[in-house]
View 1: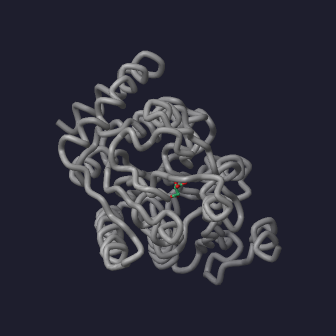
View 2: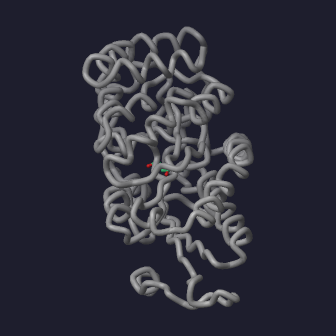
Length: 328
Ligand code: LMR
């Protein structure tokens, strides 16, 4: 379709500059899977605005939201093939390629926005981004989308209520393990397919942030939402490495400066989005919102407890220890 054309025709338009010929226009295609009116959607827009402004229009960022070009299953491959130059997948979606990344999927480790900010801007995250070099991808930064909640077609409050529920999950071993420990039936489904699978009664529940639930209208089918805050949703902002290396230093600096400039803003906006969207859901008489009391939350934690030692044994104790140190 028409978007593809603009991506695959390499843009070498001469840039209107004194050094015409040397400075060709550079197009960065940025693909993502969520709606525009979300913490990631607006972050991509802000990034575009800053980079285009700082480069005086020499760099153009084209954003393709809503899985219109690539979905969870093929966006990393598209990035590695330089079919798009930037993506910002949820960290969980990198775990099949780089298992250490599963540390960010461990439930009930990060429990406040403050801790989340520390972790996503800290050394553990930097090491994870560096691991991307192994697959010829340059990791730039992490963006935030807060905490995951449980949205379901019937109430899931007591931990026993997970039993037998078909739960949509992002692909990833720890997430799968999590739902197995809860006696649910996890099914890995790309984000762009969740709405239709709910409509077709293929799944009963999912874990996601309020902004993702609200912006995709999942609550119209999953009208029971439990505010469990059991896991985090973080985005790894990444760029094709060959493309990155082909950029002159000035442009590279414009990109990293833009990301740095908007980092705190992105975190604040993510919190605000989730708060605001939650207030809309609370005001909706068709949606039931539940909080977990201390005792119930502890029952969830107890059920999930074996997951930590399994991660340490199977994957890497170093990252878990480092992460815990960062938030204590
Ligand atoms: C999901 O698949 O539910 C999320 O990772 C979507 C996103 O990018 O926030």
